[in-house]
Length: 336
Image (cartoon, rainbow, N blue to C red; front, side):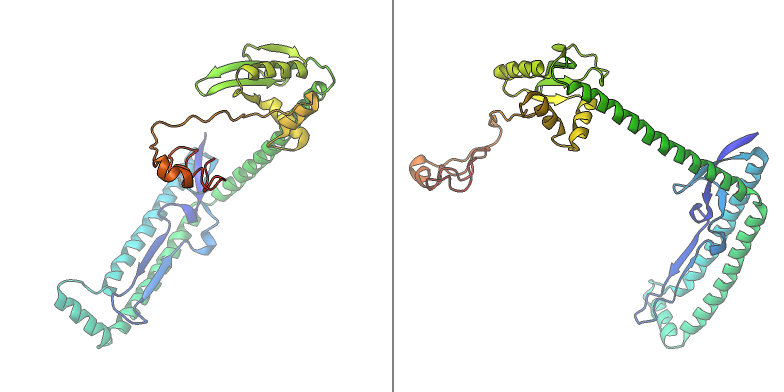
C-alpha cells in the first residue's frame, strides 16, 4: 500500500551537515587556524532523503516497506554525521586558549607562540579532519547504496508536480480570459445609449454614507437596490439628489463592475470615472472632501492677538489649520 511521505534534498535534511569552525584566541595573522565545513559531498547533494524540512520538500507516494527502509537509512546517515561533528567539535578544544586561571592561559600562549606548538596542533588537526572527511564520504556512500530506487520515485513525483503546475497555470489563464470576455460583453451592453442595465443603492455606516453602483449581470449582489435595471443617467440623477442632501457621500462601483470599467481604459486608478463620464457626461468625484472637524484632544497654542496676531497670525495651532497662519498679508508659514 503506497504511503505519501515528504522527501527533501540531502543538502536540506536537518542533521546531514556537520559544521565546525574554531580559532585560537591570540593575536597575529595566523590566529585563525582552521575554518572547516563538512558539508554534504557534492556528488550527493542532488539526492533526496525521506524526512521533513522547512526547505524544498516534495510529497512522494512510496511503497510502505520501502518508505520505512529509506527513512531508517536517512536516520542512520544523520546519526553518523552528528557523531562525526561531535568528534570534530571536541578536537577544536585543543586550539582554544583557556581563559582561566590566568597562569594556564599564559603558559598555553607561551607554548603556542614560542615553543612552536602551533605547527604540532595544526598537523594533528589536519590529520584528524582528513580521517573525518573519509568517514563522512563513507556514511553518504552507505546511504546511497541503501536507497537505490528512491531517486526514480522522486523524479516521477517532480514530473507530476510540474505537470500539474503547468495545467493549473493554463487553467488560471483560461479562467481569467473568460472572465475578461464576460466583463467586456456586459460593459458593452451597458454602454449602449439608454440601456436599462444599472442598479444602485445607498447605505450608511459609522464612517459615512456610500452610494453603490453595479451591473447586475456581473455582480451576485443581494443588497436592496434603490434603483434596479435603470439607465446610467437615472443613476446619476439619484446620486445628484443624494449629494444635494449629503455632500460627503462616497461613491464606488462594485468589484466586477469596477474591474470592467478599468479594463476598458487600462487605468487602475480612474478607469471607472472615465467610463462613467462616457455614459453620463459627468465626471464623478468618488471621495468628496467635506469640512474637516477639529480635534478637541489636540492642544492649541495661541498667543495674544495684540502681540502675535498682527504679525504672525496667532502663533501655533495644534489643529490642521494652525501653524504660523495669517502672517504678512499672505499666510505666513502655512495655515491651510
